[in-house]
Image 1: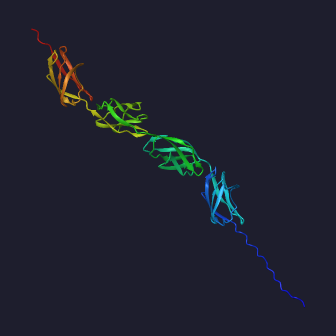
Image 2 (image 1 turned 90 degrees about the vertical axis):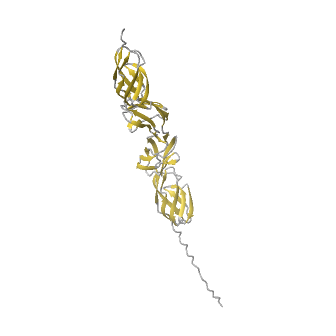
Length: 351
């Protein structure tokens, strides 16, 4: 009796090969040539990733966050390279990553401005395209415009002292160039504080931070000449003008507070009474006219006389001694010297 046995066989089904990764983007897709830039790789099929490469260089480090996201640190490099992801299923298609040249700054013009900010400056250098920040010390520029790869126009924020100016691009941050914040000038006094309407008066202005003055203004009119004697003093010549005006000094840091200067009209004599007197001193003479309030001198010829100002239209003077004959009487004020009127000295009769 034969023993019949039935047998069965099982055929192994080979496992499906793992799917290769798909890389759709690298964010950011630019970075410095020195590397060390943190980037995010987006895509799918990132399970079991065994390599992330930038061109032929492996990422410095990478972390598989999920099947759709990897964070990596770019290695050093140059130009544009293909980023790929590899797993047991294969290698992804490439996504381009560009190494940006490091930017550099050569100058900032002007290199100084007021502490209040608002100065428009031009930064020159190289590799300035795609600038993402312009910093004045720790403070960002109020605004900036990338004019070209070699120039940026920026507006300085408020600040103080000397600050380093830097530009940041995808290629990194430049070394500094320096911008100097200046203190606005201030005025304490103008001496003398008045002068003739015709101008030409030498005035000493005292204050602080006057170095670098670019103009001295009497109202809206610039002084025809001025000299910066020191950080605390300027000597200026008044322009022609009228009334009381505000004097200000302008420097690259701004305009000073004002101090007053008064233009005094030239005095005018219309009468002298009496018109004659003795050769001896002491005769009291009344002068009438206008613009006499600020009289500084009354002269009979070249000889000064004692006087009293009674009003803007009247002065009394004590005629000095002199020889017989006619002399010309004048009044001097900060507004100038008046026209002259004759005064005649008469000798006492001989007995």
